[in-house]
Length: 332
Image (cartoon, rainbow, N blue to C red; front, side):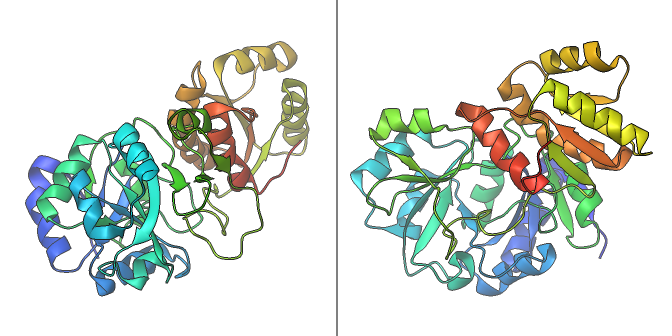
């Protein structure tokens, strides 16, 4: 199968026809690029799992082009859920609701709930609207690999597995959406993202984070290793430990690289002098936008990744959720 990258202007018509024929199409969102298929077509949805090599018990998120579409996908939507929807949609958030009987088991992994997302990305909304149906769509990468934040990332990973990638530039958010379960007694964040715990608490009054043993996954990214580069990756407890790990790997004949914000890099420069690094910007929001891009670059040019610890609050916690999965929890 030949894979092509097309602009929305040039590729929209073909992309819509592929969806109508039960095929998959890659499209941009503000978080990461998605691999989409008609959410109401079980056979089309199975092609997502086949292209990604994704376990069938890992549910998919359904993307919509208008708030009114939620009532086609979900039932018994609570007042608090509608408040979250009103406040944060469109945007980088997925709300888990009780599913309607229109949503096939292939999308939800047989669960009685469904994750719904309304992206703010203009091209995503135009594409989904033109399709006229919600699109089930995980990140457009081979299962367990680094999520793509550009069309080029998708092409590198999935060439020959998809026919068409719609170009939408670099993703502005850079990590997957926050997922909040609104079917539980207390709204529960299952995956952190750009919409933080504090932001949700201001709307809901009470919200909790997921910290229990996983038996059945209600959201993507909970049961399996995710976001992993092709080389080893660790998280450094401090600038000193990052510098020591870097020097040790160089002595072992490795080619390491440090991923960090500018102030962290400046601190390590005082310890090491010259070293290889990838700059993640000045703020946590910069780092969130750049982290996957940096991981893609690092695995191409280096054989060992050392990453800054971004802490346990706000956006930093969301970044660490991805980094801890990518590194398998390894720290130095």
